[in-house]
Image (cartoon, rainbow, N blue to C red; front, side, top):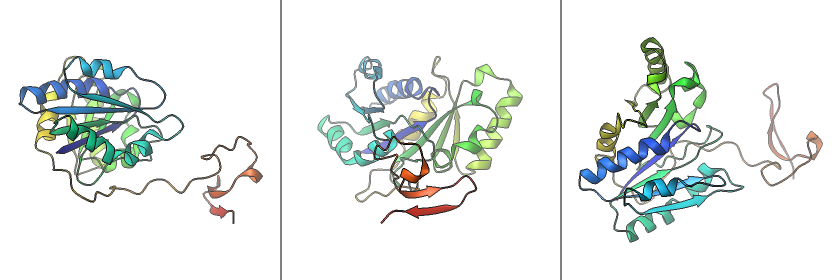
Length: 232
């Protein structure tokens, strides 16, 4: 079983790129299955179903979608095996960019939109810096010079990554991405994350609604950068 985790910035075209890549995997004779992780609602599963591949949806609701995806990796793999799939494509929503939901024995794919600005790759963090593949979308909406600057920023943040220029409308780049998935690593036994998650939970994470700092506990970072633990 091969696992590809597809993450990235909201609205970057992850689903469209993945649909084209899934279609190419089918042409290669592979049997992909898709798990779509989103926050509150999605109908992307209907788009994947048109490919004729097994698809499951997970809604993170009040959890970070990347955390939700990480916690459920074993269940997703078990489900994919029950569907006789040999490739699991896991698309996760991604929100804070600080989480990187990539296990070490998976192909890590970050999808990023070139129209977000030339410095966007430097702001994304582990979502991009720990990825094996960075898929750049919407390049047709900017100039060649802007694409080159964006590419250099990606390599500045992650010098070892493979950059794929893709178009979610035309399918450009889908074959290259599908080949990387096909040739990706087999899932290992005891997987570990490539990067540590953000600092431990605070009271906001557990539902505290009051704004004043005196009500909050846990690992807290102040505006001046000072970090402290408040609590028992």
